[in-house]
Length: 162
Image 1: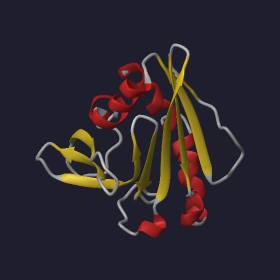
Image 2 (image 1 turned 30 degrees about the vertical axis):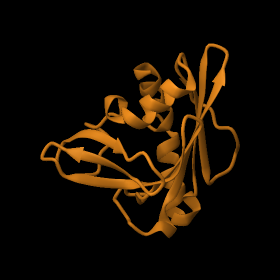
Image 3 (image 1 turned 45 degrees about the vertical axis):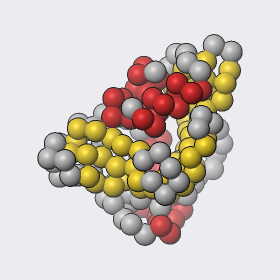
Image 4 (image 1 turned 180 degrees about the horizontal axis):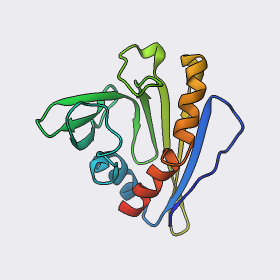
């Protein structure tokens, strides 16, 4: 099964993509949260200065979401806001529209991922919202994550890893 590039609404401050994976929610959850580095294209999507070798999500509310580079340095992407395995994950995305880290929680956008059991597997729904926090550049950020190479392609890579 592969990701379907669908927007659930016309909200200019939200991007919603879904993927159906052939695994139960607990397995889909583990691949998304514990094995992100196996499917996230770290050679393309990283913010650190050195080649990234892993993507890590600390398994708790308040945990960090970050990349690890080849030298062992960690570059934060955001925080875990909700950790409800295997059904719901809410992440604060602390990246600016220029894809640089900004620790200000008032400027973070949200990435919510839900895992719902369906016949034959799991429906994984991802919604990235809150782009209005960045003013005019927020619209550009939304367009970037909604375009080819954005969340739909990432979910397709994830679905293949499951």
